[in-house]
Structures are given as C-alpha cells and as structure tokens.
Length: 252
Image (cartoon, rainbow, N blue to C red; front, side, top):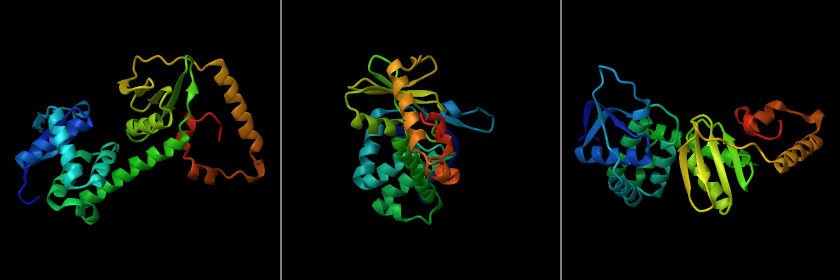
C-alpha cells in the first residue's frame, strides 16, 4: 500500500455490508486511506474530526463483491463478510487494508499473517464464524401461534443474517422470527423471503398452549436423564457458555 495516501478524515457509512463495499470502491479508485471509518449510527461528532459520508451504491458494491471473488478468491470474500459481522473496534480500517493488499497480491494475502491488520481480520472472522456455528446448535425455537416460531439470542457479534440463512435452508417452508436482543433487531422469514427489521415496536405473541406442554416435557426429560453425582458445571460451561443459557428452554 506504498502508493496509497493516508488522509486525516473520518469516513462515515450506513453500517451495511453494501455500504462498506461502496466505501472500499471509492477508496480504491482514489488510492486514499482514511484515518477512521465509522458507521453513521455510532459516530459522535467532535471538532477534531473531518467526517465525510460515503453514500451506499449497489452497483459499486456489486463490482467490489465480484472483484474480490474473481481476483482474491472466495476465501477472502468469506473472510471479509464474517469479519465485517464481528463487533470489533476499527474493523473497517483493517478490512480496507486487507482488501486493498488483496487486490495487489491476490489469494496469497491470506497467508501473510505476520502483517498485524491481516492477523486481526482472521481473528475477527474466527470470532463471528465460531459464534454463529455455536448458535446453530443452541438456538431454540418456540411456537407462538399461527404456525409461527420465535427464538431469541444474545450474540456478541452481529451474526443474525448468516444464522438466519442456516435455518432458512433447514426449515424452508416454516415461518419464523430470530430476535437479536443485544442489537434489538429481528430476522423475519415467511417461507419465501426474509428481511431484517428494527424490533423496537415489534410485538411478540406469547407461546402457545401446545408449546408450553412440550417445554414441560423437555424439562422433565432433561432432569430425568441427568445424573446429579456426575454434575460438572465447569465442563458444562466450556461446552455451553453461560452467556447463552438465558435463551435455552432447559435449565443447565
């Protein structure tokens, strides 16, 4: 990145993946590297910053998306997406450097782990991907009436979309809601398409009578098969982190 110019500016964007890819496009064309990249919702104005809002452009985003896959490889695209979902400070600047170097060096960029920002990208990808994988097994749907199922989660990272994709493929004809209570957003799926919405004014119905019966049966089964003499809370927390217990039906 020796021919890139570091500028004393803060770039703002709408916080979406397409918005970030649009920003990558503009930076790559201008060969400029801003000091900070922050989503507009998280930005706190101050007199030291020189903010510039980068408008989301779907065509630019598509070109960067296709360019990453063609020139740097699918693995890099995969790493970029999951790293973007990570709740990490300065993730956008690290990702921008990673992609710009990737366009220069190609797929080999993923082997250059001695470069700090590439190492950080790989760690971010590992964190968000790992949490998404865990929640695929820990997420619990509850019937809330009218053939609609609801599940709440409290993830560290913003992994509601890839998690939703997993259950769309597993339950393609089922109507369901996945509620990220940390970010107060919901993924709604109606058996055909999905969308992610703000959950501030969303009213979730109470669980159905049938669901209550099955939950009681499951709790009884869970307690019945447990061997009290072999309880190992430490091992249990390693296999099933305590922070996820609040969204489980059973009582660990």
